Length: 164
Image (cartoon, rainbow, N blue to C red; front, side, top):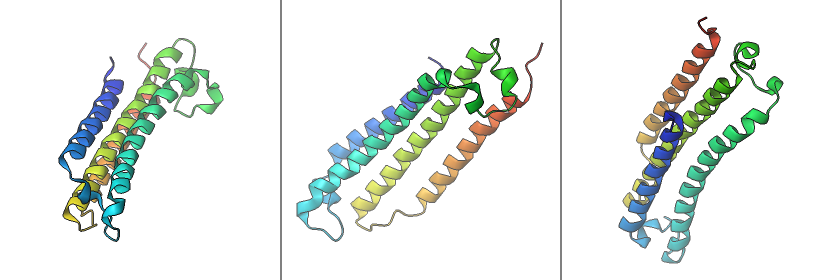
């Protein structure tokens, strides 16, 4: 398996294992809303884990769907440097794999941010402060730098013609 899809699988597995751990280790009362009563703790818990799972599945679905949709897209709808060269018949298949890998890397980063976000939300629930703290700011900065690095890597690659 190529590294990009493997990274997304690893990020999804990390989300799944973290969610399972949090589910098993946390009493239901920790999920009671600050203004709510104990009666809505169960729905808070299901909402929390539903959004966690839903986002992880959405990111995986976007990457996999993009991989299968990409070969069917007209060349005019693909925006990349030197697209006439890179999408020419002799380079097309390799370029489509690279474009799909780009999406897998981006969705892996988004999935890891989902993990950090939900762990921060969990910690705020357990502390019952209803404040996420400053770590989510740093997590979002790491996500932004990661996304920028992935995009720049591919843009530099496609901006230079292949060696003959």
